[in-house]
Length: 190
Ligand SMILES: [Fe+2]
Image (cartoon, rainbow, N blue to C red):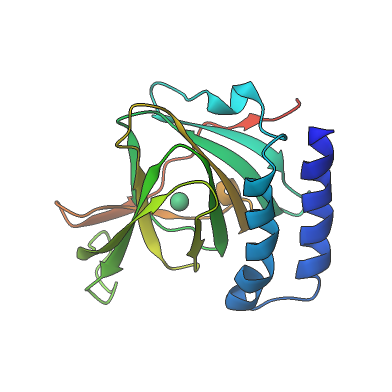
């Protein structure tokens, strides 16, 4: 029954995104569909609460297309852990499912003309809890951390498979930009 919700989401996403190229348009169409997944969470499996100790979070892939479009994944952030600021190079919509994770939006102050250099300042922090949506444009830079005592779980939809993209990770203190490390990912139902 619960897997039906995931298959229905993927079908609805494909319908909603047909012929859509504009990231803002895609985000507007995807947002109500992911919000629905936070209302009935019977599709969430116990293994989605597991995280990789080295990485600090766990990723379960629910969908990715052969042409590297339409990534749907569940991410679990371990208590006290997080991820450095990074971009996505595609649009994204995140909805909180369980627990609380802090989404940190960063603003870039330099023009990106100096390779390896990036000057960031924190723009805002948002608590992502069940049903709270965070949207990401391709060049947006964000980080996430879990300040709580329990894992946080969120559902993510991206226009493209992130592992197929040349993304960047940032260090706001040392003002550096470098290639984003590849994440450890698990195929759900594999
Ligand atoms: Fe991200």
